[in-house]
Image (cartoon, rainbow, N blue to C red; front, side, top):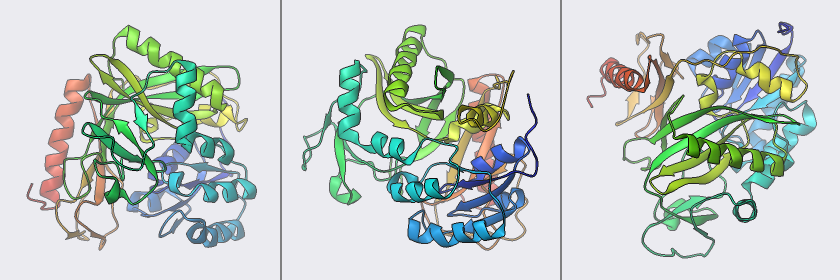
Length: 366
C-alpha cells in the first residue's frame, strides 16, 4: 500500500463533515471542512472549518472561495446533506476534482420514478410506491424525493411540504449494505442494522443509529448482492455507496440507494477511504483491510433545550462534539456515540451504557 502524500489536502463537505474528516486524517491527508455544525472534533482535525447555514450553493460558495484562496485542494469528498441541493454538487464538480459519484449520477439516483421503474425492469424487489397527490390509504408512508437521515418521512404529506411519493409500509428491520463500486466489479463491504431515533418532536423515522456486521440468511445476502450489482451497473456507480432495505419475514425489499459515503463507512476500518479514492484513480492500494470488529454509531438527540457547558469532559467514545456554549434545541442532535464489542449483543449493551453516561453528563434527565 502506498502512503498518501501528506501535503495533499482534501475538501470535505456534508451536513456534518466529521466522519469524512476523520477518514481523511486517518490515512494521512490534510483536510478542510465545510458543514453546518463545525463540531469541536471536526475543528480539531481539520486545517480549516467553514460553518454554513445550509448546503445551498448561495451559502457554500463564499466558503469555497475562501478555500480556494487559502491554498490548493487535491480534491473533494462529499457526504450526506446534498440530496436537497444537487446544484451545489454540480458547482463543486466544476471547481475541483470530485472523489465521488458525479452530479449527473447523483441527480439520476434522486429521480424516484425512474429508480423504481428501473428496479421493476431489473427484477429487484421493493415495496409498492405511488406518486399520487393524496394518500393511497392506511399502511402507506410519505417520503420526500430529496432527503437524508429520515427527515420528512411520515404518514402525512402535508407535514413534509415537499415533493415526494408514497411507499407501502413494510413491517421489518431497517438495514443497509455498504458496497464499493469499481469499473469492473462491485465489492460488498458489510451489512448493517439501522434504527430510528425514539419518537419525539423530530419524528419517528429520523435516523437514530447503525451497527455493522449484521447477520442475515445466506439467501437474503445473495439477493441483496445481486441487487447491488445490477443497480451499480445501471447507474455506473463508483466508490463507496449504500443500499437501504427492509428485511421482513416475506423477504428483503430495497428502499433506496445513497450514492455517497454514508455513516456506516466509519465502522469498517481506517483503510476503507483508500479503496474509495482508488475507485476514482486517486491513489494506488493493495492489501487494504476491512475491520471485522462489530461497531455501532448512535446519535444522541436533545429531549429538551440545552446549552453546552464549557466544563463538559467528553469521553473518548463521544464524537460530533458540540462547541462549548452551543444551544441545542429539542429534537436536534447533540453528539454521537461509538460502541464496540465481540458480538452484536455486547455492542448493544455498550451503547445503552454509554447513552446513560452521556445523559448524566449533560443532565438530560431521561
